[in-house]
Amino acid sequence: NAGVTQTPKFQVLKTGQSMTLQCAQDMNHNSMYWYRQDPGMGLRLIYYSASEGTTDKGEVPNGYNVSRLNKREFSLRLESAAPSQTSVYFCASRDRDTGYETQYFGPGTRLLVL
Amino acid sequence: RKEVEQDPGPFNVPEGATVAFNCTYSNSASQSFFWYRQDCRKEPKLLMSVYSSGNEDGRFTAQLNRASQYISLLIRDSKLSDSATYLCVVNIGDTGRRALTFGSGTRLQVQP
Image 1 (cartoon, each protein chain N blue to C red):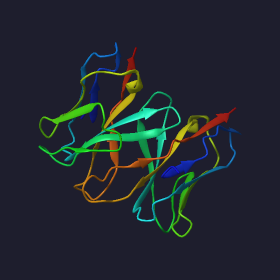
Image 2: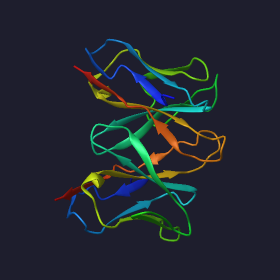
Image 3: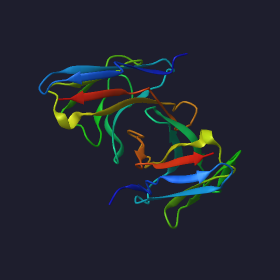
Image 4: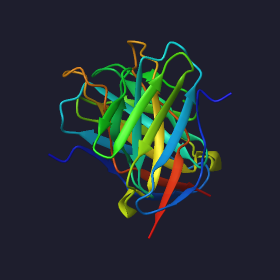
């Protein structure tokens, strides 16, 4: 049981390049989330998916798109990277079935946009 | 005003000390409250939920004051391994997204 996995761990992009961050969970959770973490800012929600086939914007969605490919996978795409998107990106999934609201986080992707 | 506010610290304490962190939240509709722990360059992990009646887990005690909209975490008999950033986390509870709102964290450094 790997929990939440993310790829890649690190990435350097040039301004204007595109990339997709991958996330997968093996806990059969319905809800999945993408956050970004910047120094002094805490984690901020980019997009979330309450269930397979649905996605919604969070607090800071501009410049990002997401795909909930199936129940396990939730990807985040940067179409045209900007230096302001330099950050650490965390994917998370939520255990709703037991009534708990704990979110389980992946190890993060560190992205540098030059 | 931030939705969840914490003193960033750092709190530098000797081993064995008792240390307390406070956190305030602005949305009175908040329903669930948590403390997460984040080690340097790692993902956040749930430390404990915070219940209205207060709750304890070993050396850790969490309290919630809804009237004043603040949450506290008390760590007794600090260990070197407690060194980390502690994130105060609130769930407003709208049924759609159930996303968490994070404070920016309080850094704790326990020294030998």
